[in-house]
Image (cartoon, rainbow, N blue to C red):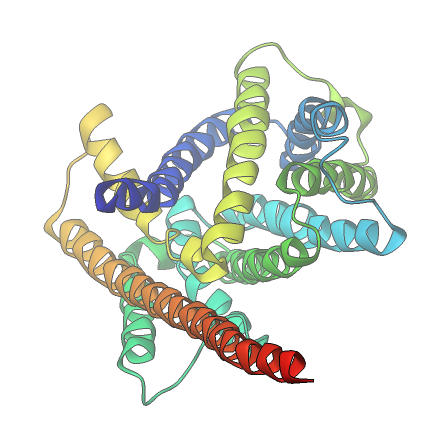
Length: 347
């Protein structure tokens, strides 16, 4: 029983590691497509449009009897979720990279756990008590995991890196808002597939309107059947359908802070994959930085697992107390019944 419980607990962890690996692949392919002249605004529209074509019919056909009713209020929440997670976040990431570099983008993505933790505490999704050792470990782990910056000489050599940094910081804040808002929406509308489907649908419409405003040349919509098509298909299937579905499921199971803490881990994964598959050199600074990230990451995950066990134990104790109370009432009732019967017989 204990082994089965441990394996179940490992599923969200393994799923989030796979998400970060797929994200590294998406970054590589999208960079290759845009280096050939593809507009990143058009890339966001096409990838989310294809994801919508895959997800939306599946949501209505497979989950038509399981999902809660769609109200105007729920659709408005989906619309705002798309605004933060696709229209603002994705476009700001690509715009920021175009002004600066992928190195700066990787560094500033480390802000996501800090932003998410702050928002989760503000909206009471995460317990925060400075006197509690677990809360202290969470804070320290979050700070440690985001405290491994890239080489400053790589940043200062980039033109317009300040502008790029502003876009990338906005993207990190938008992703943190998306994580937190997603958790709140799933509490009232627990249908992951429907949420992800409309998330991509509204994101496609919003991004298309933004692209029509920003891109004046109609030729940017032309799609070449080479790396551009490959990157869009990869982004739609692995970057949107699988990734968004996995993130939504993990947020519902483990909360927004758990999901956000895997973002810095992506830097370590990218460095390791580059060394294995591309022959990149692993510098000692990169290794130390990766170890620092992992230590901070493990601290937060450990503290959260202890909190979950504590909550489960309190829940079990409460259920046992309620059961004992019911048993005591039944016993008390059975003791009173013979007296009542004796009195009735005497009468």
